[in-house]
Length: 192
Ligand SMILES: Cc1cc2nc3c(=O)[nH]c(=O)nc-3n(C[C@H](O)[C@H](O)[C@H](O)COP(=O)(O)O)c2cc1C
Image (cartoon, rainbow, N blue to C red):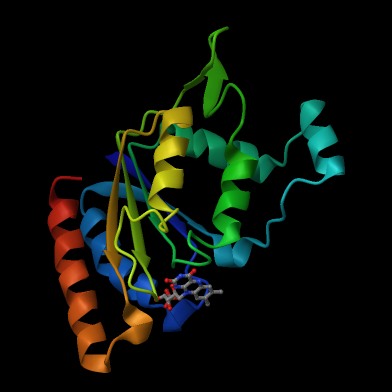
């Protein structure tokens, strides 16, 4: 069975609209993929500090990070479920990437530049936004960040499933937006 890595940063847990949108898509993908899930809300990870950076420079990285980097490098697909915070995703997602962006695991260099080592061909970002900011808008810095990371790690195409303007919608409009985005995500999942 092919492998899907799910990175869950739905910090509001059961209250999360993003998780509600993501779960049926993940359930649909679970029929075709073996899933390894990283729940970032439970991992309590911290950005690199001068001490942990010095460790890394000496070749010492946390075992969980090396293991996660290897799992990501071997994954066929990656799905990130993360709400839209401060015009991107929650910082913990970037912190996670910082830890697992490891030389000779997720990327290496060919003497002229960095080249990716990941097997993944498609990444799906599932998100919900409070403001009226569609995917691809200059103010939307989550998809564009993942596209850049995909160029570093060689992750392939980035597809975004989103519902937006949710904080300025009536409860009925909100339901409709989540339902429409779920339908779109389930359709994408069929060929993901
Ligand atoms: C800390 C925080 C920061 C946010 N920043 C933004 C933002 O910059 N732009 C925006 O459109 N919505 C922002 N929102 C609103 C959320 O994107 C929106 O409510 C979303 O649906 C929350 O997803 P969730 O229910 O999965 O947590 C923010 C919400 C929180 C809690």
